[in-house]
Each structure stands twice: as C-alpha cells, then as structure tokens.
Length: 154
Image 1 (cartoon, rainbow, N blue to C red):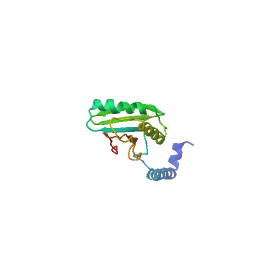
Image 2: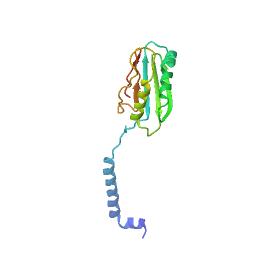
Image 3: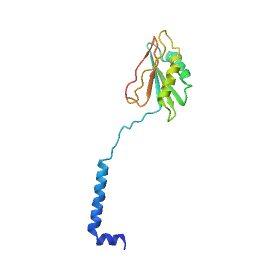
Image 4: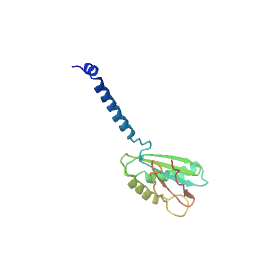
C-alpha cells in the first residue's frame, strides 16, 4: 500500500497526525529562547592613556610606542593596533581565542607597572575589568600628566 493511497483512505488519521505535529511545533517554538546578545567576550584588551595638551605626534612618540613595546611580549598576543589622537592614546591588544583574559589582563598590568611614561608621579595603573559592560577588557595607564580615562560602555 502506498502513502497516497493510505492518506486517501484514512483522511481523519492523517489530518490528526498533521494537527498533532503542528501543535508540537507550536509548543516547541513558544518555549524556544532566542538570545539576541549572547555572552560573547572577544579576546581584546585596550590600554587607553590620556595625556592632556599633547599633540598626536608627541602622544605617538612618548606614550603609544613605549606601551606597544612593553606589552608586546604578553603570551598569546596576536596583534597590536594603536590610535594616537590629540591628548589620547588607544592601544588595542588582540589575543588568540581561548586565552584566559583574566590572566592576560594581569600580565598587561604587570608590564604597565614597568613603564615609565613622561611626567612624574605614580606608576601606571589598570582599572578593574567589567566584561559584562563591554565585549573586551580595558586597562588604562595613568601618570601625572597622563590621566587614565575609563572606557565608554558599548
């Protein structure tokens, strides 16, 4: 016996099976959770340093390049990119997927402590990480004349 012949002879049975499948599909669809913003953390760390009153060329020479040299030896580092603007330096560190970002942040903080930025005063400091506010980690370097600026939440 073929399926079309069975469907013609047992219309009610086939109709009830179709309604049952549709009902199970509707129940499954209503219980399906859709997470529009999954908890995804990119393996990046940004060192943002503010040096008030300095031109971009000065920022590049006195702040950005020393930071790149000091943190460039951190384990699992894949790429370093930087932007130097008037009074502001952003150095973005991209790590390999699967890197423990807590450990990487500690290593970067240790390297920043060794850094001698222009000016006098305290050693560079890295603020506490807030991975839920941003899809990466942020670390700032501060010194007298170089003021750390907290990252804006995305």
